[in-house]
Amino acid sequence: MGNREDLLAGAKRCLYEKGYGRTTARDIASAAGVSLAAIGYHYGSKEALLTQATIQALGEWGDAVGQVLAGLGAQTDPEERFVAGWDGVLASFAEHPGLWAVQFEMIAQIRNAPELGEALTAVQREGRLGLAAIFQGVAEVPDTPEQLTRGTFYQALLAGLAAQWLVSPELAPDGREFLRGLRLVGTDVLAGFRAAPVG
Image (cartoon, rainbow, N blue to C red):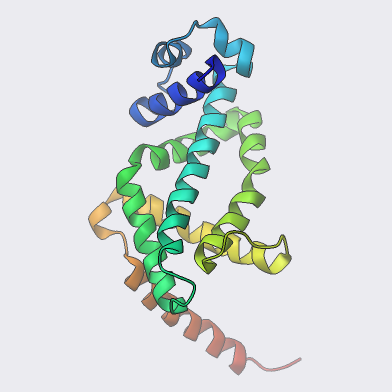
């Protein structure tokens, strides 16, 4: 690998081990085995490098979860795919706990670092479409309002599940509990919608 790739790999290691706020430029350079000046040369700043490292790690996470669901086959019952998908997400939390802690840490930094917010916002659409594809068991989905809505819904569930898992892994719901909750809430909401007066 070249210095740029080495820095990215080193930054990901530091994020997992130390978090966003405690990682220094020197930590990253040391982990990458390159000079401190290489960070500025290739990425402009430590913050820009850490943001790129997080985005890449999220992409790798999405690929891993997508492979879990791809292994189920196209004929899998949609409810079983939903359950297996969320169970796969939970397993990924255990494999990459640092990734999720770092995301919440980065979100807390956005107020003081607008460029960080801009970078994360820039990948929101792609992330939402990726989640829509993952849970539908396809490689990709078209960029349509319907698919974005699906992805936004899954993203909201994902963020909530990650927060619950970080606080107390043993209390985080599994895929079967998620499906039960979806049925209950869906019934409540749709029944209310059908009962509402027209006009």
